[in-house]
Length: 71
Image 1 (cartoon, one colour):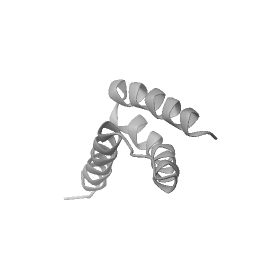
Image 2: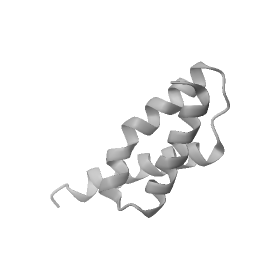
Image 3: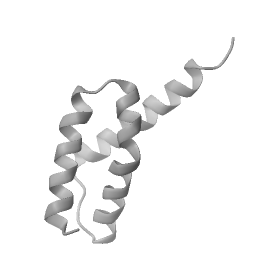
Image 4: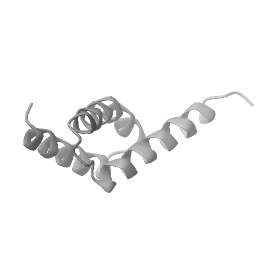
C-alpha cells in the first residue's frame, strides 16, 4: 500500500473511531496500529490525532479489562 493510501485509510478509521462505542474502537485498534507502524517504518510522521486515538484505545482496553473483573 502506498503512503497516500495508508493516510487515507487512517482518516477513514478516524471518522469511524470518533463515532464508535468502546467495543467498536477496540476492534479498530489492530488495524490502526498496523498502519501507524507501516507509516513509522517509512519514516512518515504519524499525525498527532492518530497517536491520540491509539492512547484512547489503550485506555479503553485498560478500562474494559477492569470492568470485567469480579469484585
